Image (tube, rainbow, N blue to C red):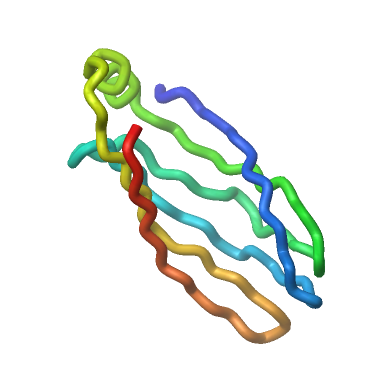
Length: 103
């Protein structure tokens, strides 16, 4: 079985109203190889003008971890792409995103 990894990301809501983070799903790629999926397990309320720590989950394969460890010191391109869904009252909005960096 693959190891389960949880990490927290602090998010600030600068708005004067709260909202609900209903869904977050993304996939991380190292170079052109898929490393893992990243997601939240349940919806999370984010209050107005507040900071909150959001727990993300992932289950990378042991092959992906070994590939990262044994790939040497060469700089690699990391890409995370996916979407978030936020909700306020009856309104729901899906935001796709892509983040690219070097590690």
